[in-house]
Length: 449
Ligand SMILES: Cc1cc2nc3c(=O)[nH]c(=O)nc-3n(C[C@H](O)[C@H](O)[C@H](O)COP(=O)(O)OP(=O)(O)OC[C@H]3O[C@@H](n4cnc5c(N)ncnc54)[C@H](O)[C@@H]3O)c2cc1C
Image 1: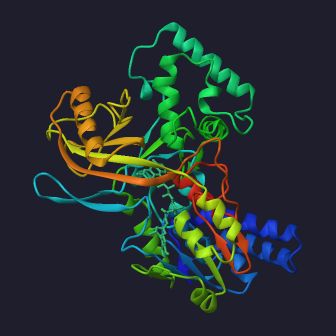
Image 2: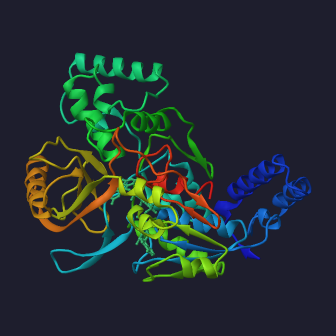
Image 3: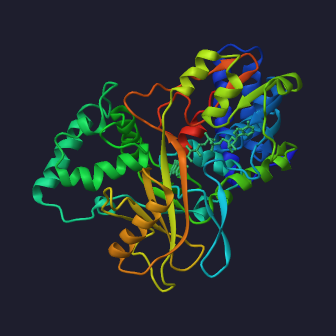
């Protein structure tokens, strides 16, 4: 039997025990015996994988198309439940939109950065769980930045600003952090002062939903706030993350989760085929018992156009928003006061945040959510903004604009339903669920698959 790392023992034991219990409730034959057996066994052999649910169902051959975080999480769960997995990934690297890329610094040195600067939250429970399952040491790869008002304030607030924030939060709390469909974030924020909107609500909304408050879904925004500010801390290995903690990757995203997962899967006999774009489903359906489509939404729509035309049409109706990451080099002795700083932003100053990168001294990543305009213009504006705000000279390193970084999380959006046809399922950050287009949304979508 393959051996799991100690980090994952307690987790997988309790998750799988819970699953067994759920299955027992549903009346599966012989499951009670299995539950009792597993309860005993888990105390003794918590290192073991695959999980006990593998005793309950015959192992299936599963094809997973796409190795973004959703596809990788689905692969881990499938292996944990005793199935044999083959992952097909069109590109040459794992991680999808949250992947590593090679970049050349002004001094000619080649380094590994990200396709786009990412931040996780302490509330990303499913993501943190699956990272631990594959043996990621969370403390080694993520810097915790407790969130406070100061994280966002870019100007002095007056008493009336604080009062307006208290009123706004009290209203949201009384509503149970929920509101009817169709209400925008801006409409929810009528009691907030202009400063509170500019300093706090707009950057929070842009970073969580990548959609401007005037069109962003108030319902999804409140759900994210609810999870971040009212849910229990994430406790692991005797340590804990408060749900609202921002978790900033210390290293490139590829090494935060995808490469660990690739090795974890291969060590358990799974195949990971990079550079293999799946052109149509039929050959995989002939070869495998089950196919999981974990591609970008537009590719899923293409693959399913004949089998599920209405569903494909609902994907076609999604709109997307861009994110630009401008990597720039400050003098080597320059240090940001914190790992992440909020920046006052408007059309001429498009970056909302700047992050210190660890890969080289003085290396910075400026993030423009809901980015508009051309790459060269964005880069020029951000460099001027950064130099003025930080008071240092900046050299451009690389600007990456992901045009379809996330779906537009507007009040008009209709999320494509969770599609489950015989022998086929679809996962990804865009599939119906409580979260906006995020890593946690992607991983959450794999839960019922
Ligand atoms: C610049 C940027 C910044 C972001 N910032 C954040 C952030 O701070 N926090 C956060 O939580 N989220 C953030 N996101 C969103 C997050 O990256 C995504 O929600 C998440 O990565 C989506 O994962 P996924 O697995 O659903 O899809 P993808 O990552 O899109 O994965 C799909 C995979 O399928 C592959 N594929 C497609 N078609 C085929 C085919 N036919 N055959 C084989 N393979 C195929 C693709 O190559 C890709 O690897 C950001 C996104 C971007 C682009």
